[in-house]
Length: 131
Image (cartoon, rainbow, N blue to C red; front, side, top):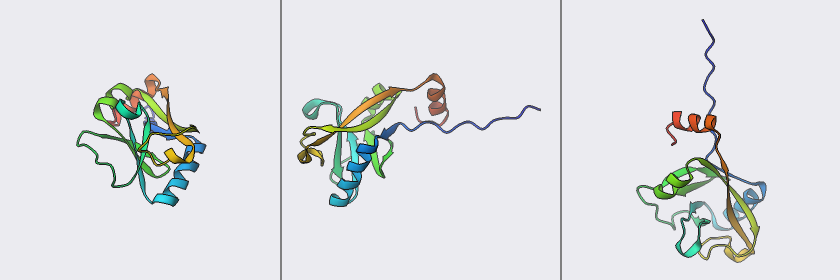
């Protein structure tokens, strides 16, 4: 009888760079619990926006991609359909972030980068019911 290898866990759908994780810790120290929402355009462009927890109303169709630095990260269902085959990597760059985002006044801004999932990673996400 052949050994059956356990299926590897699905890859995280959102991650953060060390610089982003440091900024997240600073923001949590200053503001308490926070959450992220990947904006889909309009006023702020397509940017990750950081809010104090409880100050952004999530919709019933918003998708929780995971957590970065202990903060939940959400995206709209429509945006998720576009991005579901990519891993979002949240980074920090110099500049002034989205007007509504907590890091905005500090001279840094969160930035979304992405990596395409491999076919094997997509299969693992699918098997886990994530896409």
